[in-house]
Each structure stands twice: as C-alpha cells, then as structure tokens.
Amino acid sequence: MVRLLGPQDRLLRMIEKEHPSVDVHVRGNEITLSGEPAAVTAAKGLVDELLTMTRDGQDLAPSDVATSARLMNTEGGPRPSEVLSEPILSSRGRVIRPKTLGQRDYVDAIDENTIVFGIGPAGTGKTYLAMAKAVQALQRKEVDRIILTRPAVEAGERLGFLPGTLTDKIDPYLRPLYDALNEMIDPEILPKLMATGTIEVAPLAYMRGRTLNNSFVVLDEAQNTTPEQMKMFLTRLGFGTKMVVTGDITQVDLPGGTSGLRVVTRVLADIDDIHFARLTSDDVVRHSLVGRIVDAYSAYDEKRTAARHEREQAAEFANRAERRGTRPAGPRDRLPKRG
Figure (cartoon, helix red, strand yellow):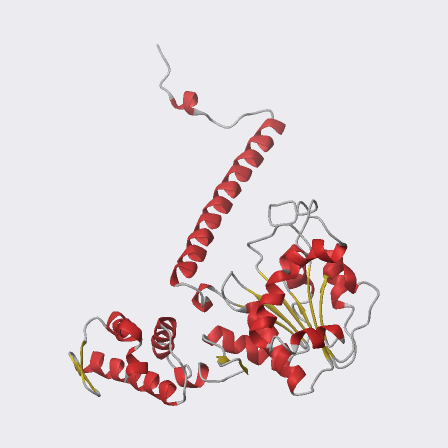
C-alpha cells in the first residue's frame, strides 16, 4: 500500500487529479472509491493497473499514473501494465523501461528495423532508451561493440578556447553520453570496455572512411548534422549492425545551412527496414513542466511561421501588382473623395 500511494501520498493525489469526480478514501490496506458508477469503474481500473505494476516490483512515479490514465482513456489501446512493465535493462538497482506508449513503440521499432530515427522534443528518452537497447544488445552478445557519436556543434557557445588536447576539447560535447553510460554500466567495468574498444564514444567526424560491422551505433543530436554528414554516417552501415539516430528538429544549433535530419525524413521516408519514430510532448518523462514548455514553444513557433507566411504572401502580392504597373489598394484609396 505504501508503494501504491507513493511518498507523501503523491500517487494518491495523482489518482484524485485524474478522476476529480471520485472520492478516494484510504484506511489501512483498503481503498474505497465513491461517486458516479461510470467514474468509479474508470478509477478502479486505474487503481487495479497501478496495483499490478506495484506487485511486479515497479517503483511508480506521478508521471506513470498520468500515463496510465491516458492509456486507459484510449479506446482499444494496450493496458498500462503491459506498456510500462517491459524492462529493457536492469543496472545498479534500477530498471530501465519504456514509460509511455510512444516510447514502447520506439523500442519495438529498434528491435524490428536496422535503422531507426527517434525524433522528438527534449525529455522523451530518445537517446537514453537507444543507449539502453545498445547495452542490452551487447550483454546478449548480439553485437560485438557499441559506438556512440554526436556532431561537435556548440549550442550557442564557443568551446574552442578550452585548454588541453583534442580529446580534452571534444569531451564536453560527448559528456551527456558518458553520463548515461555511467548509469547503465558498472563504473569499474566501463573503463575496461572503453579501453578495449568494446564501447567507443567519438565525434561524428571520426566516422568518416569506416565500415561498422557487428555494432550497435547511436548518433545523438542528429539535428546538428549537415545533409552531407548524415549521408556519410548512414553509409557506414556494415553487416550485423544496427543504427539509431536521435534528434530534435526544433533545436538546431547549426550556424547555417539545412539540418541533415530534416532532409533525411524526406529522402528515406519510403525505404523498407528504416523506421521514423516520432515522439511528442506526451512522451516527456522529465519534470511535468518540460512537457508544457515544449508545447508552449511549439505554439510560439507555429504563430511565427504563420506570421512569416502572411508577410511573404503580402510581399508576393505587392511584387505582382508592381509588375503589372498597379499597386495594391491602401488605406487612402478607401477614403471618400472630396467635392
């Protein structure tokens, strides 16, 4: 019961938030639901699913309650206990598993396809789940090595002045990948795997000229690749290799030009064994504010795009009128004439 209700009854409050018309009372090991029959039935289904996951040993978070409620409101959708209880990796006392339906579809796509593109906003677990699948494949001996790479592009800052060797300079770009690896692999084993080349973390530029066989390759921050870099990376594919490309096309840090991730969604859209998994703000598993921030920026970008489109249309109309020797009617043309 303690695990079901959560610390300070946080999960209980989430249940009440998802079903505000139902009164929830807890006494000892009993939960009593009261209200309209239909609402009570829906709330009972949610509690039963949470109880199933708790009995399976899963530590629930408030986001899991919200996700479970959303899944149960989807007609014909899978049960939350089926989606949220499929472990990918167990490491250092934690279990890594999909936490949303979109994440589960993304993980399933990695199993079923040779190349998978995980596209979505920050916090949707694109890179983290891809790296968990890579470690899982290595542990199962499905691949001989893991290669993690990302383009060395500054996010609005200049890091070239950093002291040290080339390795020291590129380390800040690759630090997020190291951080994730340290969560998934024993810290005593990880240095040995990296020393032997079983796990390699390198900038994208180091991929040129190579053929990657029997490997699990993850390209992170792919929105910061150029079309030429994306083509170069994808053509490194060798036998027995699986590739996962992750990125957020709304966070491009390229100083100029076109994002290779945007281009590849159009070029490779119809090729078999290549899958594009699109995650949304519903799949954000960080703080609940992150999803709202993502939605707010999306709405802002849509307004800017619409305004720019209107300006371009007005300019095009004015240019056509000028070529015809006329001009569009202005406010003065609509004033009544004197006399």
